[in-house]
Image (tube, rainbow, N blue to C red; front, side, top):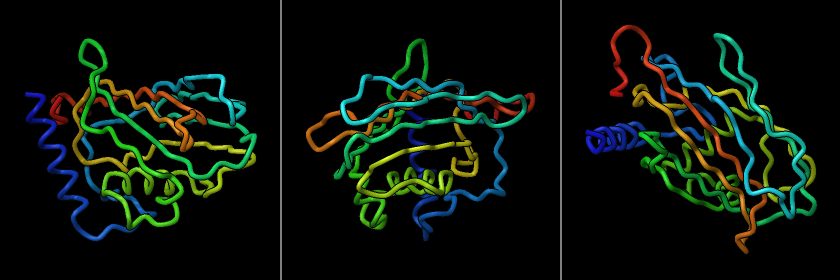
Length: 198
């Protein structure tokens, strides 16, 4: 059953991204009906202490009947370029298991030239640039101060209900971690019938 859900989601993502894609706009129609709610439950900054990054805050503020707000702030101790990003998405059964996405890319190349990367990475960076207008380019340096509110328009119209974890790591060409975060999300069906394939 999970295999069929995964294949359907990949098909849906490919069909959605097959047309023209504007880099800084939501990929999926904001007017599409989403029969689920998506919520960031918590963030954990992991693999500390960091050699090239001084972490000042890493938190999540839950709000009733509104999307949660995520805060990251820190200071790069030296300019960093190139910077690579790896992200993996997990779905929780009894424990967290890998779920569809395990990608890496050169952040500096994608930031400057989005047309040169896979559709999935373009979706990821486009989502970040839309949600975080002050996202810095390369080299990464100085103070990094990010407030992020999840935007459901950046996600497909259908998602399996359940618990997710996304591991995201920013690292140097020598594979030294600049900073890393685990984000825990929940997807809940709206209404009395579960229409999110969960």
